[in-house]
Length: 138
Image 1 (cartoon, rainbow, N blue to C red):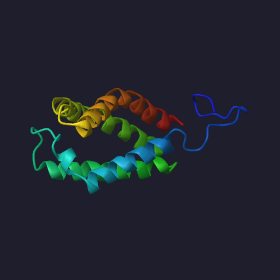
Image 2: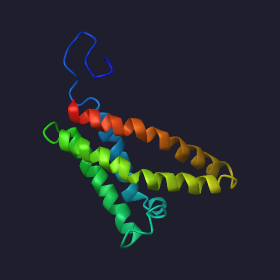
Image 3: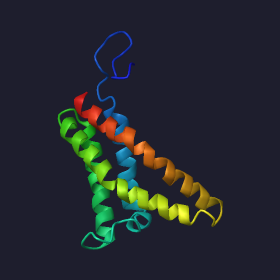
Image 4: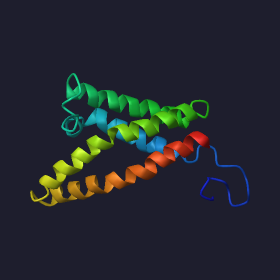
């Protein structure tokens, strides 16, 4: 496949490319928010009204809905735009999570690994947002 998802033989883009990998990622993130919400609660901005847990659970449900929307061709364009918006909206929380991990990096190997993963995630959101936009056009 080339960069647009077309087969090397000149065929049409593969159905769902690049939507399906993004859908899988959003489904995994949504599941994590619902099954292990505590780390996500900690990065919900205090300026948001209500309890952090409500925002964590709502974002998990949103990620699962977006994953389903990306998986279905009929809803893919709208879900792709909404996915890009969500990825941009949570970027500050991911930055806060990375900053918190940076401050705790001296607390053992697990803290250093968490720090590395959260820092690596920040620049990876740029291609994720681009993939979401491309998924809507595919």
